[in-house]
Image 1 (cartoon, rainbow, N blue to C red):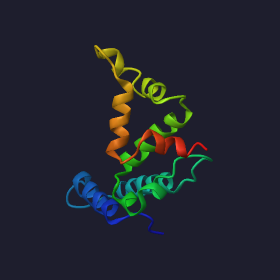
Image 2: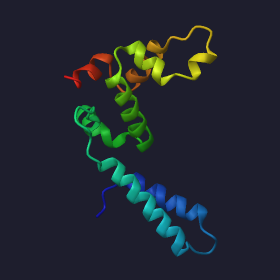
Image 3: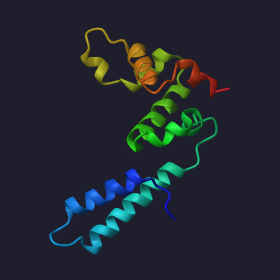
Length: 130
């Protein structure tokens, strides 16, 4: 069953053409790519835990325009946010190493800007907790 999109297909074909030993794509390479796509599709269709932020519902048709990387990263960030007591607490957890490098870390502002990049606010995250 095809559960991806044309961007997935195009990326797979490009990857296969790039990694292939001329003049052909080997069976092993094709099987590895199929396994990678199955893993990718399983991650996208995995059921969300109770209370998890529903990206597809929030983003609607724009959900399909998000890269897999952005979807997975955003889902992880939102999971941390939902466990946090405040925006500052979530920011400290998420930026635990890079904040040590800054003279004046403002983790709340960094997290707020990250969420805003996806059209989300802290209030949006809190709404899913109730």
